[in-house]
Image (cartoon, rainbow, N blue to C red; front, top):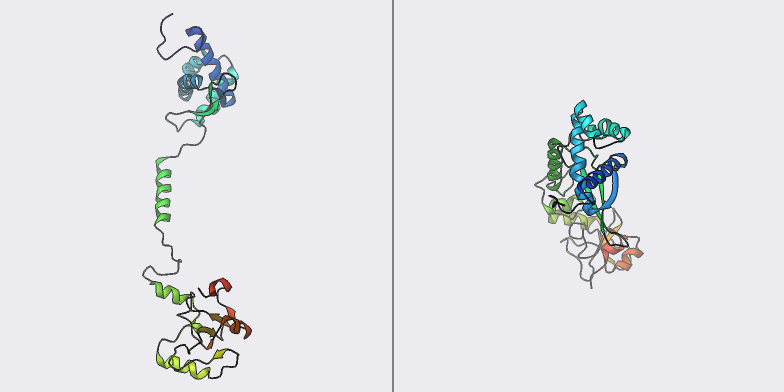
Amino acid sequence: MPTPTKGPRLGGGPTHERMMLSNMSQQLFEHKRITTTVTKAKRLRPVAERLITFAKRGDLASRRRVMRQLNDKSVVHELFTAIAPAMDGRDGGYTRITKIGNRKGDNAPMAVIELVMEPVATKSTVAEAEKATEKAAVAPAAPVDTPADTTAEEVKAQEIPAEERAPETPEEAAEVAAENQDAEFAGSHAPLESGEAPEGFSIKGNKNSMKYHVPGSRWYSGTTAEIWFDSPANAEAAGFQPAGGAAAQKIAE
């Protein structure tokens, strides 16, 4: 027996091998996918793809050429009317081989060979997808209504309501102190004209929002202190709630 040109033969002779590949091609076109050994799948791929190429031509000579290998007319009809049109935009690679492990018993490596029926992504579609990905990657993390040149301080100030923002001038601090002369709560102190915290009172309270802020919390430096407390417990006893929740107003040890 002459040495085969492409690896060992699958059958006892060349005729047997051609018949095996023709039958496997017919089963592949009928069921769209079959499970076989890796060796048979690799030998089946060029045979099946060549038949698909003939079917894409669609003429009578190509149909007669395919019927020399496939003896089932219903499969030939399926190949020319359904499979070939689905492969119209694809220039090659009509089949896909996926390894699925070894077979029990003889431990032969197994694979699934299937027809690639998915639509082909055109170059324009791929380019549009890449542009959309790049645009999403470079998009700013700031909110949409925040200008690109906005500083961190300005963004932080925008998060604080206008009526709670700290006074920017000594005159504003004195005005806040004059409006809040009386400290009517236990453990509280009225604001000073200088705007600084009274000794022993570091908790800021804002009467407009009825929230309190501890030193080091997120909005502490930018909030107006209309009343000062010596502890969060006294602030809560006076009816003030922690700004941003209790977790956001914990004093770090």
